[in-house]
Length: 137
Image (cartoon, rainbow, N blue to C red; front, side):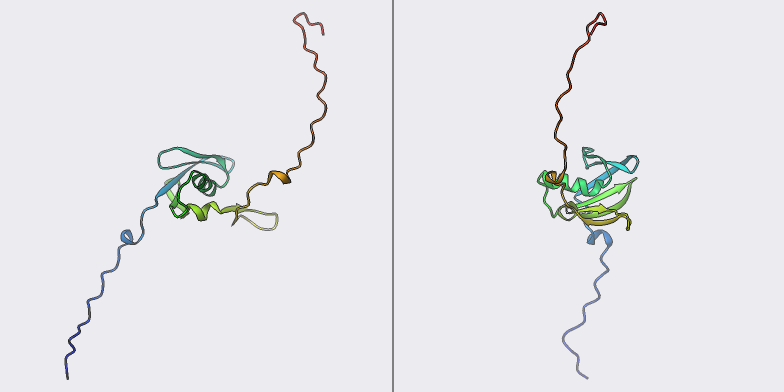
């Protein structure tokens, strides 16, 4: 039997979780304000969005509009517990949709179109007659 000059390498040690997963670049902390609404703050405790039903996705859109790199990792903590994680660009493109026939689900974000809003034309202003101090009109 001949011995091969090559020897098997010892198995690589298992990678630790800390070495594989890098920490998020931006952490969003949310505070419940009531009735399903949340305020969202960044790492510096700066308010990103107020009274939002989708604070993670809305915060991502704010950050993207401010020029944050879309590939920046983003994570949300709710009561100190990690709840959502994504990149700024991916999260900015999403929202939560809910319909009469289905429950909440993540969906593609569609910006509000002002052109589709039906605003009634203003009517003629009513005559205004200020009161005088003596009660006469």
